[in-house]
Length: 114
Image (cartoon, rainbow, N blue to C red):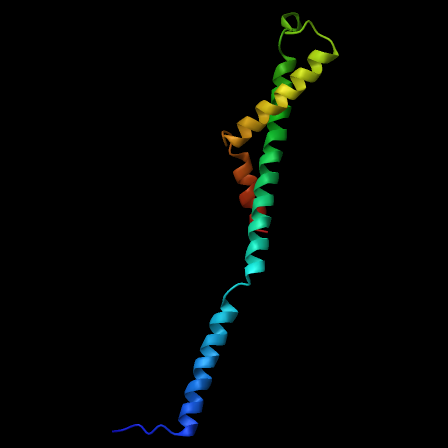
């Protein structure tokens, strides 16, 4: 049985192919939306790591308060306080970057769901 290609059949075939193509295009995300989503995830990851670093810094400062003040590195004073604060902050950032605690991952996963 031969199928006759008529003008109507050909037009129906073209229309169905166009519809499939349009659906495929609509299912794809806009590249700008993908980039925004990626940037949002990166910003969220960075914020989660910064929060974990702040939390760790608070813990380190609490632990530092338990140390004997007689064993100060620079014999006390404002310079030593500034140095120790900066050192504590850098250590906290390093610990957070190493993902030792995993707090940043928990925060990131929780906020990403929203």
